[in-house]
Image (cartoon, rainbow, N blue to C red):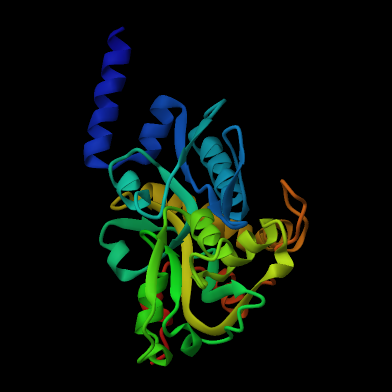
Length: 296
């Protein structure tokens, strides 16, 4: 009983201090992974509490390495679904230890959380119905544009110089599947989001040929796994594991599995090749924010 009280007190202290995730994992034998319901092939649910995807697999590998590092015979991974709106707060307050979704590393977020080395460099694009006639930003004038609450995509669109003078109405989905549905049902004319998320939702739709990704690349954004701030030991453990995947070439195999091969539940292919920017991030691992990717 005394041990349980001590463990509980320690957990509460970690929740406040957010200082020693490795210690928390070793003490409890558990870790909580933040996952997404519908972030394309990066992180999504199969139902019944099962979560899969490119980032989920990378995080599972990372946690396996941490289990070995800590000498744990068993590590219980708990999955916590997060949204674009609550993912950062849930990492900050200790509910989630490692967030494995589709989060852009930017300077503002770096004030609140830490990011592992970049595992995916994304391009923000526009998805529309194939018969919409929309092929560029300019044609969004007077249209309804869907995006997901808590994401940076529409802010990015508004800042794009080609969007100058383009007036559109924003409609918000609670998650990416909801935003895609707004477009699918005709309540929005376009869905602006990370290309991989757009491609993943199109691949999982009833009729993928009914949709297409069009227009200019709105921004280039580094996507990474999210960790608590000011916890260098945990960040090093996560980064070292990911760098190992990059050095061995295993990360390319994980990419191939989730983006180029048929994936569950419908066994459709996303069909997204690795970009040169992503290859560069694998070759020279870093945790630079998206502001460093902006061409001067």
